Length: 281
Image (cartoon, rainbow, N blue to C red; front, side):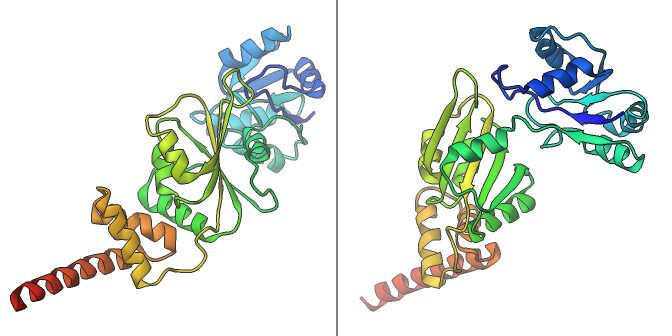
C-alpha cells in the first residue's frame, strides 16, 4: 500500500480535486498537521477517517511508525493548506517511506506559491522558491543580495507584520507582487515596485502573504560615487550609517563593510574640505 501526498485547498474549499477526495475517502489513516483543521475539511465533504497528528514537533518520532503503517495500509498525508512538504512537514516521512521501500504517490493540486507566481505577472521561466525568508541577519542578507544579482523570479512566504520590513530591504525599484489571502474572500494582489509596496503596507496588513519578486535588477557593482550617493540619501532620510550601508550593499552587490567604510571616509573628506574652506576664508 502507498503513502499518498494529498494537496488540500489554500483557502476556498472548492479547490480540491476529485482524485484527492477519492483518496481521502479510501484512506485507512490520514496524517495531518492539525486534526481540528483537517477535521473541518473532512466534515465539509462528509468524510470520516482516523486522523493522526503529524507536525514539526513530532515528525522525527512518528515518521518511522507511519512509514511502517503504510506497508499494509493506505496512508494519506495532508497539510493545513496546499501541497505537503512545501514549507510544511512531510519530508522525513517521505524519506522514511522511500528508504523502507514503501510506494509513494504525489497528487497534483493547490499550491500558494504556484498560484502567486502565476498571478504576479512576473516572468515564470526561471523561478527560485525560498519559502519563509530567514529572520537571521546574515542568512537574510545573503538571500537578498542574491536576489539583487540573479535574473530570476523569487517566491517567498512572509508574515503580515514583517512584510513592510522585507519590502524596504529589497532594491526599491525591483518589480514585486504581494499576493494576500489567495482564493479567499479578501484576496488581493498588489503589483508594483518594492518601494511602492513598502509605502502601501507601511502600516501593516493582515492575512497570509506570498511575495513574488523579480531579481537581477542590480547587475553590475556600482562605483564609489554611486555607492556613496545612495548611502548618503538613506542617511538623510533618517537611516543610521550601518543600516544605510546594509541596504546599499544589497542593492549594488558591494560588500557591506566596503560600503560603510566608503560612506564614513567620504563624510570625513567632505567635513575636512569644509573646514579647509572656512580656514581659508
